[in-house]
Image (cartoon, rainbow, N blue to C red; front, side, top):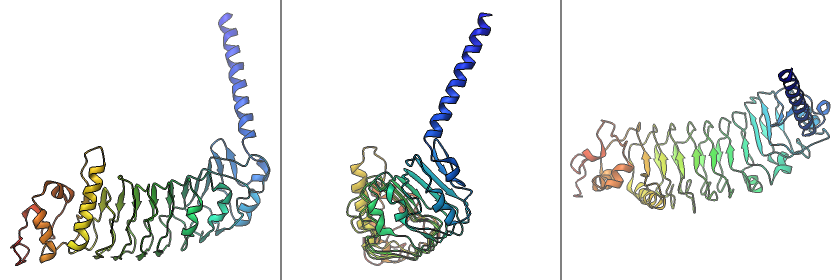
Length: 332
């Protein structure tokens, strides 16, 4: 009988806890009826059942708790999100993704989240423009994902965000990057720009005045055939991935200063890992004096480790090259 009584008490306590949690969750959400078709739980607000932009505006006129951790608007037919769309609501992490008809997004729509927003993912929508200059107004932003849209260019001095660590621009038909586009991102650690329309890296396009010792720039799987001598001026990423592009040479004017900057970055790190430039999958000719600087440094242990995956189009490694192999008549 004592065991039975104990079980009943445990059941009653469990019910009280469940009821208390349900009540707390209810109090942490806006008015349920007014919020529809969006829904709310302890993690935030989900609007996956939205049909129109008008419904979105109506939902966020709901009364009640307006500060939430997450917002999800995914796989909806919504076409635009304008200023004022989210009313007085504040969020930390926002995921507006996979909305194939979304062609317009106004960053000011999240104006009330200026001092709270840490994650903004606009992945795989249909945006052909983005208000880059507004990013500076969100000082807590750590991650910005613009991958999978229809952006065609990154303007000069596009980004200014003191705390941003991750920036994704992959799978956009980007054909140009303006000078100093990323120069005001001192804490950036990962920049992803794979599968874009890039053919040329212009002057100062990836020049960064200050950057993290953990900086990794991923430019793999593009069609890059030319890198301006000043494309990476002052920049020394810990990892630069240029795999599977159309580079036929690594010209000294641009790549030797880049390599030296990368070695400086490596020395500032405490883990002893080697800085790396990945070039596998490029049609590197290994012909001509453009390669002389690599021949001269091929016995340098740090340089050879940096270009560990270097391969000529015919399969030769950097250590296998000499001045006669590259048909350069200047003695190294």
